[in-house]
Amino acid sequence: MLVKLVRNLAILTNFMPAMEANIILISVFVLTSFIGLWHFVKVPLSRSDIYLGVFVILFAFSIIHIVNVKTFFQTEYNPLILLPLNLIFLPFYFFLRYVDSFLSFQVFNKIFETLILIIALVEISTHLLPLGAWVYSQQFDKNLISFTFSIKRVFVIVLLPASIYTLWTLIKSRHKYNIKSADDKIRYRWINEVIILISVLVLLVILPELAYFFSFRSYGLFVAQGLLGASIIIYIGLRNLNVQALLAVESAKEINSYNPETSHYFRKIVNLLEEDKLFTESDLRISDLAERVALSPNYVSKIINENTNSNFNELVNQYRIKLVIEKLKNMEYLKKNIFALAQESGFKSKSTFQTVFRKYTGQTPTQFIKAIDTPRK
Image (cartoon, rainbow, N blue to C red):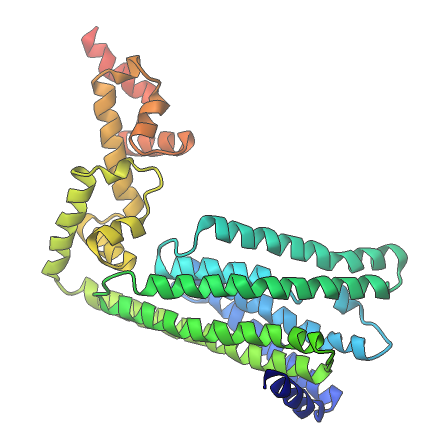
C-alpha cells in the first residue's frame, strides 16, 4: 500500500513542468527563509526562537537542493548540488535544542544530543567530498556524487530510530509533570502538535529513499517532498511565533495577579534544598526539582522567580556559596583545598565556583580566608 502511495504521488507531481516546479520551490524557499529570519528579529527574543530559526533556515536550504536534484534525471550538473544544503541531522540537532529551551529543562539525554551533533558533523563532511573534488579538478566526479547520495540514504535510515527515540522521549516528558499554570498548558499543547508534525516530516524525508529502495526514482517525488515538508516547517515557524506571543500574555497576567499556591510550593522547594541539600548534587537540574514537587519545570521556574527575584541557577548557587562559607569559617580549608570544599557543596567547575563566589562575596576565596583569619591572629 505504501509503495502504491509513493508511485501515485510521484505520477501526480510529474505532471508539473520542471520550470514551473522550480519557480514554486524557489518561492517556497524565500518564504521559509523569511519566517526563519523572523525568529532572529522578534521582540522579546528567546533562545528557543534562535534554535527554531536556525532549524527553519536549514530546512529552507534543502529546498534549493531539490531544485538541483533533477541532475540525477538529466545529464547536466549544477555546482549547487555539491553544497551541503540537504542536511538532515544538523537541523534535527537544532530542533532538539529548541525543545529543551522551549520547555526550560533538559528533555533529551545529553549523550543523545551529542551523538546527533557528531552525526551531523560527519554528514556535513561527507557532503563536502564531491565539492572538494570539483574545486580541485573543476570537473564533476559522477561516481563520487553517486557515493555521497548512497551515504545520504544511510543517514536517512539512521534518522528513523533517532526520530522514534525523540518522539518517545517527548511523549514521556509531557505526561511527567503536574501542569498547573496557563502557560504550561500552552507549552505542552504545542509540544503535542510538534510530535505529530515532526512524525509526518520524518516520513516525508524517508519517502524518496524508500522509493529508491523499491527501484523507483522520480523528480516529482522530491518536489512533493519539498512542498509538503516546507508547508509543515512554515506552520511550525509561524505557530511558534504565535505560541510565544500567547506565553508573553499569560506571563504578564500572572505577574499582575497574586497566587498563594506558589508560596506553598516555594516552601516545599526551599525545604528540599535546605533539608535534603539537593543543591550539593553537581548535576542538579530544574527538572529534578520539579519532579520532586510534581510540577512542570516551567512552573517551578516561575515560582522561584516570583518568590526570590532570581532564577533556578542563582538560587542553587546561593545555597552552595553559603555552605562553602560555612566550611571556610569552620577552617575546613586546613584539611582540604578550597575547590574540594566547593565540590562537596555542589560546584562542578573551578572557574564557575570562583566567578560565583566573587559575585556573592565581592572577594576571591583566598581573600575571604585572609579576611576571616586576620581577627584570629
